[in-house]
Image (tube, rainbow, N blue to C red):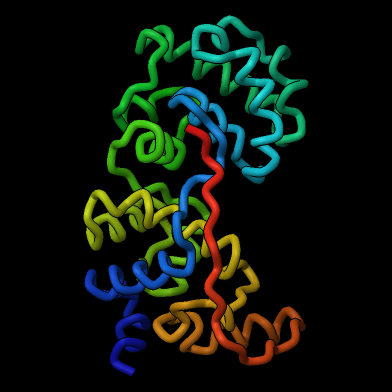
Length: 250
């Protein structure tokens, strides 16, 4: 119960426990990687901007034609937002996204000779590029240690107790401090997959490999959530091992 008491005091797990928990999650989701398709840093930057409020699967359906027409920043910088809108309409918020993409591309050409900079401050200085998007590009396409924190990472890390904050920047700092830089991007991908497959808003705790360490599970929060939603209590069963699938093309 000492560990639960620590969680109630809003302290995240010690670094050694965080590493152990993430090791168990990586076994449940082997080969975790971004599910966005891309072949260059610019393509990943575009795809990540399009993924806001949209599934990676849908983004992957529209990006082949986007990349065919606009293979680099110079080509996209010459486009008008209205040219992009029909191509990305199904991703949602297409008018705002088309303006962000053309402005981002123009800024890349003007400030960085059309190349995606391997620097967090330079990336977040581009129109439409937040810290999460910048970290995705840095970690996956440019090989710079980074730990993207999206809504899945935020939810899963706080539920388990390996982070204790509602601010994505604070969660990024807490997880980064507990892990080695070379582990950051895989940790983020693993937590994202766990949030999509298992630790959903209505979690499938009976399938979770780390539920015996999870503060959300141990304090009975999951039962209260199910009772409030009217969902039936699941039957207890063995935890299956899920096979991860990376869909990135390089």
